[in-house]
Image 1 (cartoon, rainbow, N blue to C red):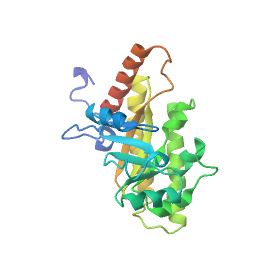
Image 2: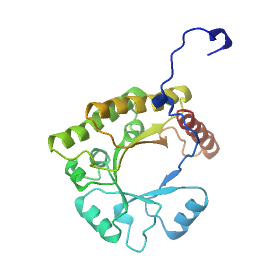
Image 3: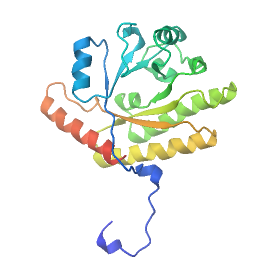
Image 4: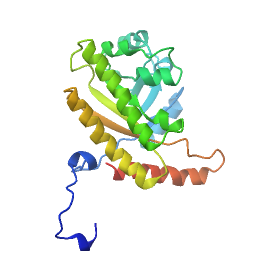
Length: 233
């Protein structure tokens, strides 16, 4: 808005869109394939708050409080809980199937009550989806999970939090709008199913728009992608 708009009737911005905060405390996450001790230490010393790893790369000796572990089977979940019952276990059965980690969507993993039920909408972006397609895919994806929970009479506390992982691309203003819209749309879907579990939005910088040989341009792109996520709340 400009000064010319003062005194005129304005659209009231809902808190749920901008997610206005008293303090801005951003958590920084890094995904690692087979992290060794040196890599983990460097990441944590550089400002990373949590490290995402696959269950296959975690042993009892490598347990770390900052680990968020992606699990693809009930056996993996049982193994990790034998290490530590408070391990932050996250599942995304449809996402695991899309990227080839499982032969079919293992929706039954929701019955294991993971700490985090995740929707990795960003994999659609990496496959070339438009912002509109990514948003609609996230809603359809989450709806499948919520329908399964309702159909199998699972309790409302099937997880400690629902995480929506969404891409942050290079189209600055479109990405701000997309990241604000996803919070509003997902909240509406959760209201329909009467789900009152904390919602976490994770913005993941796009790899789709990065060049293989231009690292300096990639730094600038990652900066604008991160800034769009911050402005979007």
